[in-house]
Image 1 (spheres, rainbow, N blue to C red):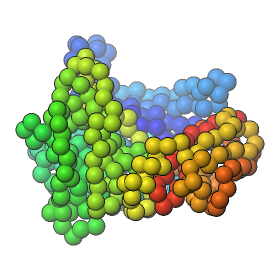
Image 2 (cartoon, one colour; image 1 turned 60 degrees about the vertical axis):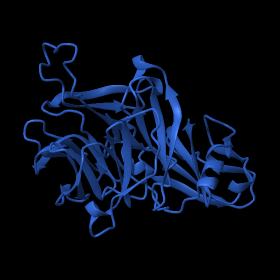
Image 3 (cartoon, rainbow, N blue to C red; image 1 turned 180 degrees about the vertical axis):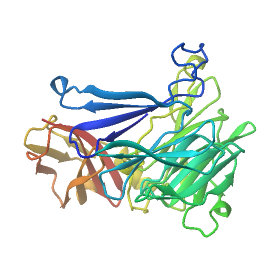
Image 4 (cartoon, rainbow, N blue to C red; image 1 turned 135 degrees about the vertical axis):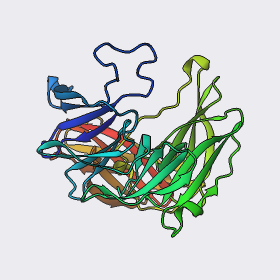
Amino acid sequence: SVFIPKPGEPNHYYLFTMEEVEFNSGGPVASQPSGRGLSWFELDATSNGGLGAVVNQQQMLYISSYEGLCAIRNTNGEDYWILITDATSGKLRIYSVTNAGLQFENDYFGNFKNMIKASPNGEWIAVSSANDSTAILPFNTTTGIPGIPVFIHGSGYFEFSSASNYFYFGKENGSTVDIGQYNLSSTNIAGSYSTIPFTSGSFNFMGQMQLAPDHKIYFISNNFVQTYLNAITCASSSTPSIQPNLVTYGSSSAVFFGLPNFDNRIFYSTDTICSNVGLNHIENTESFNILNNPVFSNINIQIKNSDALHSNIEIINLTGEIIESINIFNQPTVAIDVSKLNSGFYLIKIVNEKGSRVKRFIKQ
């Protein structure tokens, strides 16, 4: 699934959902013999006392589609593109989402299937291909038209860096997992592959990758006994590294391969500087606290880590828009007026030369 704001209507959101390939593993549903495909639900965040409610929906909008679902914001900053793959034709299907609603625009190429990802700046997309390869395509966020695909060998899991300058690809190789980096600024993207040194240890099956607010790319791996959450750090630099086994999950009854799907634009950052020591230091300590949450007028922040005293503070809404940005210098406490913000969820982000940290707050 993927969640985006509804263009032209504040506090309304679209939730798009996609059927899985194994939709009939427990037996087909009589009313859905081919699964549910692409569906959407409109949610009003102000309904039900602020808890939200579904106010409109269209299920099984396009049935012949499984697992691939991606949202990209239009250049105009308001509208969106929704991308899926057609399980029958193998084409890439593209819908526009505007204040007039959802509209099918066109389909392109062929031989695609399942997973789709977009770079945070929206200028690249990647799609799994049916011939044991993966396609990387330029994407025009104004017209919604993809460019000519570049094919890389192998079918696996993939993700873009937060600066949209590198593409990461992971796949199983015998009893191990290989993870590598492609340089999107190279004149020969397919030939720019470099392997990231990585000892996969006891797991040999790869799962999905997902960019996160800390600019790391997290990915799942498992050995069908346990499932592990791992991370690629410094993903926007030419010297990434892998942190394996950050979290270990359960036993063979809890094996899984998926991670939540997001509109990657909310994680976009042009920062390509990375310091593993500093980044870990600021992320693994409570570098700041929100002293009042929920917030009514002023949000009060306590800076606890001396490395974060000279920083930039950003307030970001759930569409990724930076609403306010201020610089601080040697201020252990900061009060920011948010009284004019609409009620809802927001992110507060502290950034300095050592890295960044994000927390969520509620404006009432």
